[in-house]
Image (cartoon, rainbow, N blue to C red; front, side, top):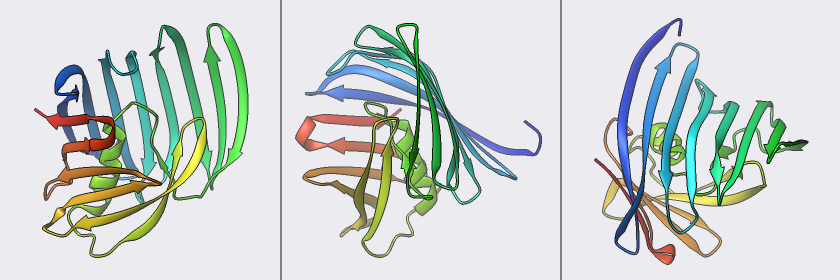
Amino acid sequence: MAGESASEQGLLSIYFRDEKVGYEEYIWTSYAEGYTLQVRGRIDKPVPLILDKLIIRLNKNFIPIEYYFKGTISGFEQEISSSIEDGFVDNRIYIAGQEQKASVRIKRDAFLLPNSIFSPYMVLSKKYVCSLEEKIDLSAYIIPQLEELFSLEPAEDSACSLIIQFNTTFIELETDRTGSLKALFIPSQKIKVIHN
């Protein structure tokens, strides 16, 4: 990619009820115009998912501009390609050979957080890099289904730990001074994700 300046690779191990159930391999690339997150992996529980390819492209302000997913969820092959411009999302969805199109409006700065995939939370850790000082309200597009509001705040004991609250669900992110995602915990779902 022209103008590429830095790339980070990593492996996330996924645990459900303390049993290792999957992994995600990611590549985070920063370049002059923005960032790209590429992910592949699989998870066996609680929802079987084979992730052949996930790509999220963001501008330099961490606002998403493009999304691509190819994989199998609960045995059904899916492919989703989305273009995002000024909060307008144009989705093309292929499920079991059938094409659907959907266009929606979301907040311009909404984060893309696809269900059952954890690497995209890195966009939050990269954007705030241990620097968040107080609670803020944000928006997530659980692509391609719905937009949800959530709050984000630093943990009391560490600016490198972030607490996310979606309604009654709490998610804790642990990061480092480079914004790398070190761990993610969802206690109510008995899920933990650890960087190897």
